[in-house]
Length: 243
Image 1: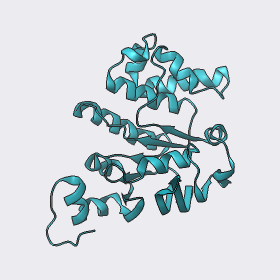
Image 2: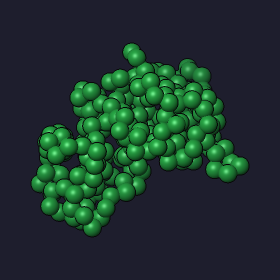
Image 3: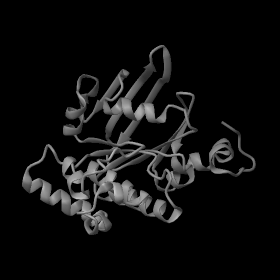
Image 4: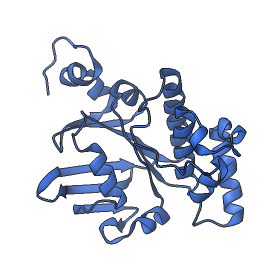
């Protein structure tokens, strides 16, 4: 598979504190890649740096372009989108207006087809389209945040903790939708503390500890790894070595 996103020897710092060190990562077309790890491991920092919210030292390429030279808006224009951990919706605006903001670069005709795609993925948003974002349930807000990012027709969607604070039945819906995105030609880079759910839908996985990747491989391999099972999945495998 050809690489859509390529990161090599990435470093991200807050002042003198290095939060991400020597990280290399690839995401291919039509692939779901997950990064799992504890709070404070550097997962969110890495996503923000890829998006351009934070400066990154190292090499980062997307569709052949050097992202380190591009502003956030230009990265979005290339087909890169981020759904942040806290969703960052405009609470006093309607669902429809929040979605429209995600298509700020598109034509009116393109926006119409984008609305149709999002409403097909999230029928509940169509039902709530005139409702204020701040009155939605937590699950609906997450759907809206994802829908807004998809309005720009991204080739790679980065999701930061999409299951955070949601009931298990809603989490199952969100992860089912993520799987559907791959079928629709959207690659996904998923940061998620619910490691078990993330590994079930991912093709490949990286385990991050203290700003570094300590393990990587197919999602099935990572799920079977004794150290991952003990640290992140809540059970032990017999007869395998730890991280």
